[in-house]
Each structure stands twice: as structure tokens, then as C-alpha cells.
Image: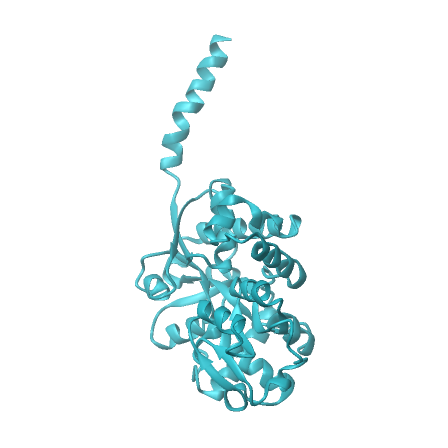
Length: 329
């Protein structure tokens, strides 16, 4: 018994010291964004410790978020789109997207009373968005062009305000539809009895042989990945488990207080809607196959041809850990 007690004490006293020696990975996501949910799960379920690193989890305002990452204040950005990565590489930053996070959890939302059945029905109508250079509007614009053959920026009467204010515009009938992303999509649906007129991931994948790009990705500096290959793989493994927990729970894990509170979910109806939407459309993924990466580069190439947001797709915008840093250490 005495030996057993000594053994237990040794474990108790050694664990903090051992934990202090575990390498730290600083990760960032947008505060209150659904794109940060996998990171919330990694933190809340202790997946960092399980996979051999100590996470420093930072939830930051969207303004200046990517710049914070680019100047080296965090190791991995969990909430950035491919457009931003392409622009950053074109400006000389050695950053790459190395894994997917969010499918296109965005689209065109109309109130339940709307008679519109396709985006074509909104031609000449007033539609809210939050910027032609935003990933949300750029992706919707290209998807509508490919599927329906018209340019929303030319054929809609566009009204620009912030993402949160768009919900109120729709609820007050100031616009007939909005371009937005989760969780503002769920807020708008609850406020107006609304629905997706275009769900970007589902509709584009149906049109494009099962492929749609991602709205958020895991992004790191190449120098960091080369210097920390084991950590890069460990973070990827932790993310994979977070996605399994999401899917196994049918997105019900979003009800856990540490997630609901971080998302600012004060209305149970909005949370119910978000869970329903996540279940229906599969808001997160870990499919980073060569086929999907090639299709994503082609998608970016189409945006570059248009030239309104990016003019080129630099080499290294999308990479795989296996190709860039070699096999798992």
C-alpha cells in the first residue's frame, strides 16, 4: 500500500512538470464565429493534451485577424479562406493552407414569405451583402455565375452593411435577400422564418461533380511547419477528432456551454437552427484529397481570371503536410 501511495504521489508531482515541457502551439480563430468551433472542441475536450501539445487558443475580432497571424503572433490560423492565403502569398508571405475546416456555410437567405425560388428571381431586387471583396460575396458571385449565368453585382440592387446588420435589414423588409454566413444565417432564418435560396456548398457541389471549395482552412507559415513537423501533424490529428465528435453527436455538441457561450448563442431557437443546418449541410470536413485540392486551385483560378479579387494563384497556396514536410515523424 505504501509503495502504491508513493507511486500515485510521484505521478501527481511529475505531471505538472512534464506538462510544462510539452510544446505550445498558438492557434487563432474569429471570436464568436462558427469557423472557430473545431478549435473550441480541441480546447474544451482537451484534445491538445491528448495529441501531445499545449494549445494557446486565441479568439480574436475579425478586423486585423489575418494580419495578426501574418506577422507571427500565432502559429496556426483556423478561420481563414483561400482567397486571403492567395493574396498573402502574392504579397510575399510564406503561408499555406494545409487542411480544410469549414465547407461553404453561407449562401443567399430569403424570408419565409419570399416567392423567390432561385437566385434568378431576385434580379432587379434589393439584396444585402457585406462587401464585394469579401470571401462570402466573391464565392456566391462565382457560384451564381456558373450555375445561373448572371452576375449578382450587376443584376441585383446591392446594399452593403455589416454581417450582423444584414439580419435586421432582412427582418425589417429593407432588402429581399441577404448574402451571409453562419451563425448570421441561422439568426436570419429564425427572425424571418427564412430559408436558404442558395446554399453555397450543397448547390455548388451538386452542380460541380461533388466539389465545392472551403470557406475556412488551417493555415500556417511554411517555416513553422518545416521546423515543427510533429506539431503540424498533431494539430491536424486533434482537428480530425474534433470533427468526429461533431459528426458523432449530429452537431449536438454545439449545445455544450463552452461552445454555445463562445458563439454568443443566447436564443435557443437560433442554436436549434444552427444545429439543424449543420446536420443538413455538413458544415465541416477533413477531405483534403489531391482531387479536392486540384479542384480548389481551379476554382481560385476562375476568380483570378475575373481579376476583381485576386489576379493570380501563387504556388504553395494549398499544400499537403506529406508533400511539404514529409511523412509523419
